[in-house]
Image 1 (spheres, rainbow, N blue to C red):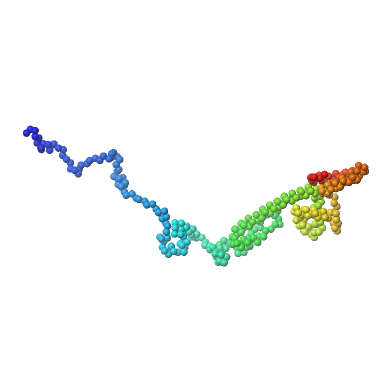
Image 2 (image 1 turned 180 degrees about the vertical axis):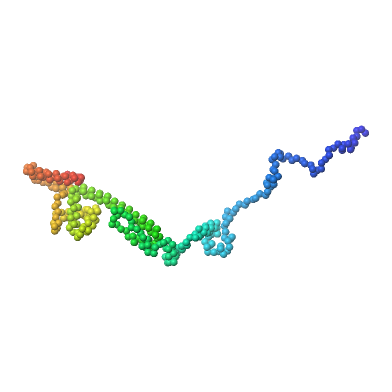
Length: 322
């Protein structure tokens, strides 16, 4: 029948099928440029290395890794079985390495450790005798003339405490400089005090100041045995406020007396004495100074005398006198 189509014609019109193994179906993973290259893909597929967090104290109980004879040695027992102890042990070892090649000086265990002390002194050049320090005299100026310091005593103390020559000389220099400063300051303070005292005494005694000191000096000259003693006593008294007053007191005691050939004519008054004399004259109506009927030459001498007394007071700068 015409309506029937032969079966084989239909079969011959089909496309030949490729074997299943040769078929390729493209994968829809987007743009191929985004795909990893084979070698990169292989590298990315390597297993990841997983790092383990280290222990907080990885070296605690570090002595377990040391042989027993070392771990139990007296030296190792000094170090704790901790990280700090390990660091201390390593530090001690490094310091010991640094000392290699240096001379070894034992530390004396006490004053009775004679052998170690002998080596210690030899290593640091400590002299056998105090004189071995060879200390020099301080270089002081003229103002320090006559002042000495016990250099031998200082050297003995330095030797007693086993000071090295450098230490002894350094301390000797510091000590003498300190002494010089103290003495200089003392003298400056004394000079300032003496100046103040002299000014006060000159104001109080006026022209009598020099007379009183001179009287005291005459007494010293009279009773000292030789010039050296005279100069020493004079220097001691004249450089002290107390000494100046003492000289003045001696002068007051002897100014009107005669001891052997010791004589002195008193022609000078203090402001107090001048004021007392003025008061006595003014309170005496019969005195020529107050008596208008006195002879003119006598009254003029009295007026001149009173004026000279006022001059003594005015010259001293004293106040509250009339």
